[in-house]
Amino acid sequence: MTEAVLLTETNAGVRTLTLNRPEKLNAANDALLLALTEAIAEADGDASVRVIVLTGSGRGFCAGQDLGDVSGRNMTFTEHLNHTYNPLIRAIRSCGKPVISAVNGVAAGAGASLALAGDVRLWARSAALIEIFSNIALVPDSGSTWFLPRLVGYHRAFELMALAEKVRSDEALRLGLCEHVFPDETFHQEVQAYAERLAARPANALKLTKQALNAAMTTTLDVALDREAELQQVAGDHWEHEEGVTAFKEKRAPDFRREYE
Figure 1 (tube, rainbow, N blue to C red):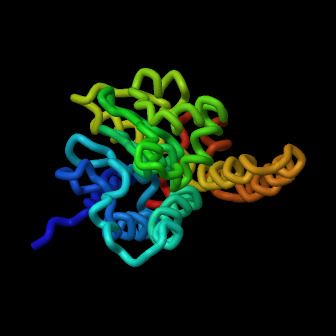
Figure 2: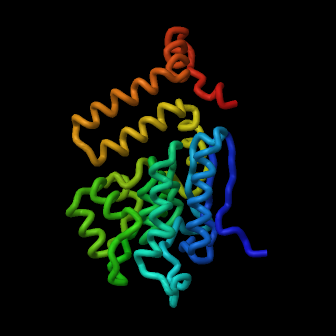
Figure 3: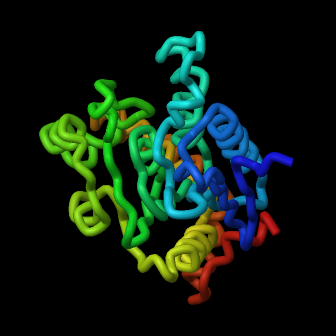
């Protein structure tokens, strides 16, 4: 039997989705991209899942598009992106659960876009990101032109894309491309521990926070203020808010998981 291109594991409310083409540094083919998009949607609809982790098997996170998979195909670049990568990136950003990009190795091309798309980016010490598109005279896609300049500014983003410069973990942390860097030897344990911390937080409030942040990235302050006021009412009407206030008054840790267990 052909080995699965995507591995799925759930532990303590954390759904880990592992890209599983290690012999190709997890370069993406259609089967992997479509399976990942479907898996994110499935996890989003599963009340027992509170956090989603995306990572890679072997030495790589994702080396971008498997060029051999599209060679000779009767499909335009636009059609391919709209069929595979664009639905995947939209699924990550619209997902109501926090998504962690656990970058265990090289993230190149569209793999770099995938690494940037998470709500939290955790890197292994040996990880690296490279916007490699210009090496084959293509334009960065799969969200890179949206994510990268918002993190590092237009000019640094252009330089990284134009020169296809590799960004290693120490510089990635300095530039804000990741939130934490962990040793390779303990990377997966550190990611799981971080994800479980996030899973203990109020799921509804985090979903609404993600909605507010996504909307605020492309709107005015006045619109963002109105949106915050609307979402604050939704959050305040939820049982999590009552639990948080009650726990504060009783001087105990809130239990934001009780309704889901």
